[in-house]
Image 1 (cartoon, rainbow, N blue to C red):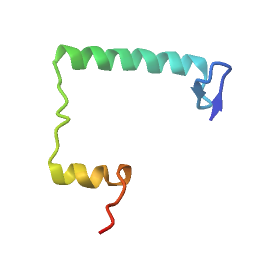
Image 2 (cartoon, rainbow, N blue to C red; image 1 turned 90 degrees about the vertical axis):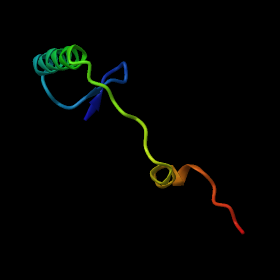
Image 3 (cartoon, rainbow, N blue to C red; image 1 turned 120 degrees about the horizontal axis):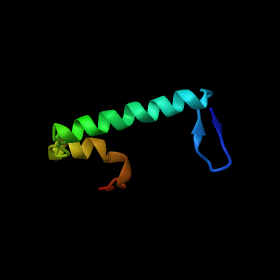
Length: 61
């Protein structure tokens, strides 16, 4: 993997392939918007504690 002068990542693929990737991504986004796909970001408190455990200091008793 390389970075260009703007800091963008380049994974060794040709520019034409990246343009095709962008077109594929644009079609995917339009399809999701047309289907009004939603994301459910809610999760249980127990799951949140496990997921965020490393972000908070441990209480020493």
